[in-house]
Amino acid sequence: MASPAPTPRPGDQLASATGTTRVIVIRVPQQAAGPIECGGSPMVPADQAPAPAPAGEATGTLIGKRYVDPADTLELLCTASGPGHLAYAGEPLTIKAPKALPASD
Image 1 (cartoon, one colour):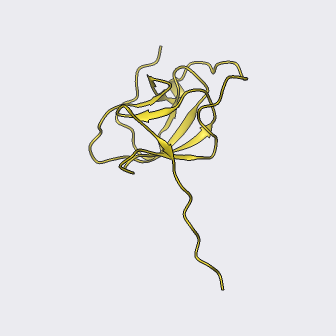
Image 2 (spheres, one colour):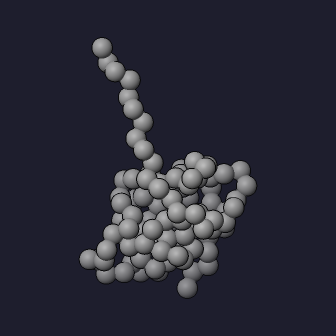
């Protein structure tokens, strides 16, 4: 089994150790507070990820969505959907709300 990822940096690609979820790190806090997890297991560098699980599992993460922690200090972009939910330092991540664009009058 692959080892847990070290403190992530923007641009790092992480993968679920137990499913098909993959993310790209967009933003990280100054002080790491804990591991980034998917489905209760720490995520690993994408190049060290085990073979993906078979398709057809329930989806917990959604491709193309950005996920943030409650303090809005960590941001991940989901590049492959999969089962399980994302968490950081034991806190669940939520889908980031889209920014409202200014009106073009």
